[in-house]
Image (cartoon, rainbow, N blue to C red; front, side):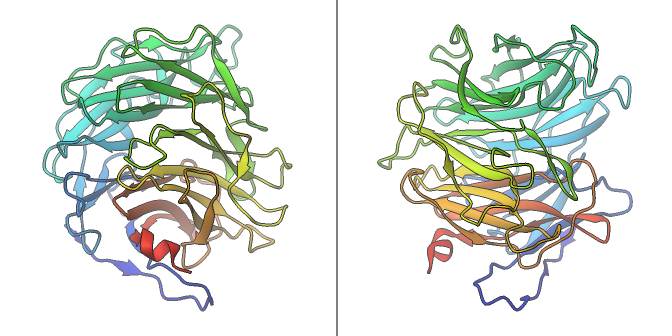
Length: 424
């Protein structure tokens, strides 16, 4: 089914705007279009794919001029899309949580489904982590550009959520070397388990980043700190101690008026480009070190494989007292540019919310930012729609975000080039 591109009209702002495109909205018979993720197919840059909700995918083969919608069905029951990656052969991977045993008691399986035809159809997929009998959530994914190896890290709970003493949550890791068809037996990476409250005191946001040499770096949030680990032998061995590399005041589950609890777990990426910043590690997250009424986006980088990190750099440049939250990061592996997408309230005293895009030309040493949403929206507390996602390749930037209008969720994008973004 072809989707018409529905554009917002210019809202009268004196600032340059980017054309906003509505990718999906609430529709009878289809899942709510929440928690979107997006990827640009490096093998065919005109191919852009976005996944959302439990079964919905939209894709373009002409650089975002037109879009089609397809269905990806979880064979294990009710699913929820959590992320997408693409390998060097142009195969697209869509990752799902699946709730197959007892509805309402948490996701017990993670699933990787693949498309070999640019997002049109999807295979039945493969199970990540096996049948552990435990609850699995908050998946982070990566791919080795040279070896076609897939990597996954996630939080595994004994129960989800649970206040019981002794209930543990851990950071799990697995990898697949055969186009996602079969995953290795998972292993726990962290040394300090969390509880099962799912409120910032359990680990979240476990995100792998893979160097061109196959070195694996991993970061996650727990108990108001960002932890880091790494493996240089394909995940067989990790550091003996979790390294606390940054503070995250308030943890990853931050209250923002109108949204309720928002998701602000860390994003970790590595520059594998041929630029002068090759090999740098980048870390982005939000916290409330400036107070509960002033959420900010923070950035760290490491030039030494995670041995040391720069002091925190605040990406948003507004005056104190407003919220910026739910960041997503992309590194253009062709140019070395870094992009960070987030929600922003600097222009309003109420709950109206814009979307901003920040970028760095100098390996994260400094950032500029622009508003990319044409109109603000005022949220209502609907679960699982405050997520953002972004992909960038060879100067093309594709952010996606959700918004709520009159109580209905929709997913939006803007097709942006770095020349347009950096134009004064």
